[in-house]
View 1 (spheres, chains in turn green, purple, cyan, blue):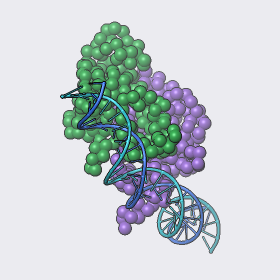
View 2 (cartoon, chains in turn red, green, orange, yellow):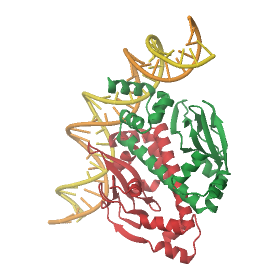
View 3 (cartoon, protein in one colour):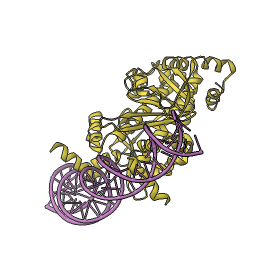
View 4 (spheres, chains in turn blue, orange, cyan, red):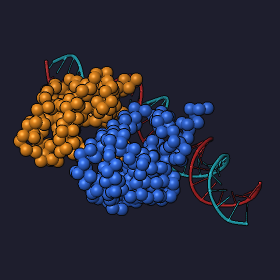
Length: 190
Length: 190
DNA sequence: CGCGCGATTGAGTAATTTCAAATCTAGTGG
DNA sequence: CCACTAGATTTGAAATTACTCAATCGCGCG
């Protein structure tokens, strides 16, 4: 759980006892490539912290097209937050793109921890705030840049995505067809 | 400041003394239509709570096209969060779409309040979490729905926007040209 | 009443999608 | 080590959709 401790301690310093208490609420799980942590309709109880590997969160529309809401690489948190907060069934699929290892915590335990330890609540406020800014940047990017530029930004920002994620998934994340992305890409470099 | 108190108390109960303390950090300001709270390049010191009216947050790209990041109606918080958190100059314009009244708090005072009062930190964690979910929904909507559908969703969800905001701004929010939005709209109802 | 801003409409152009087929690649079993 | 296969990527061509630019229309405000 050292990774998790490091992750918390980037924002809040913790004594051994404190971290021991926090980590007592987490469990570990490994998922194989193509395995699901969540499927549409599932009850959502947990929030997941990716230790290694990569998870994609996506929806499938009525025309069977896949739209990717997010990728979670190492050190990222993911879940169906809407469902988690409102106690409704999952509206997304959460699937491993590569062999993945996560720590996960039950939503009610997280709330309990936040209520008991001000520090922990601070940690998650900061995390949420950063996440909010990240999504704002993504929206701005969708509004102001075309798919080619966004593709290049993405690869510059998260080069490891390129190793792990098929291009068709990147297209489904960027909001263009795989054919278009392929053409943009070939035009750019040659 | 009763509006603000009500707003806090939707999430955390407050004694008179507590709210008095919290509200002591807020100031009030009125902005006329077309007036700016932030312009690109400004230092960003505050977070704004809209009491009445409407603020739009937007960027202008190199081709002078406007892209709207968000509208803030009554009961919403807004600012350039990226700039606020990283102490960098504003990259957005924050402009009143209608005569608007805000309460605002300095970032450092907000942090201080969060550090001093666990309750307040809880309030903002919840707010941030809700905001995060809202942005996720918007991204999903951008990926899965065309401009017409998104326009209708928007008007269903925030009918008051329709009263206040010119259609060309809605187009700049949805990510299509005003001409396209106009055509989509006329096709739908006729 | 006229001005100016916003909204609409039209026509031509550019970009993206769709559908189909071909090519490439990584992993499997012989 | 090679052949095979499934999935991923690329390419082509037609059809759709959105954009740009320009002109026109409508309306509220001074």
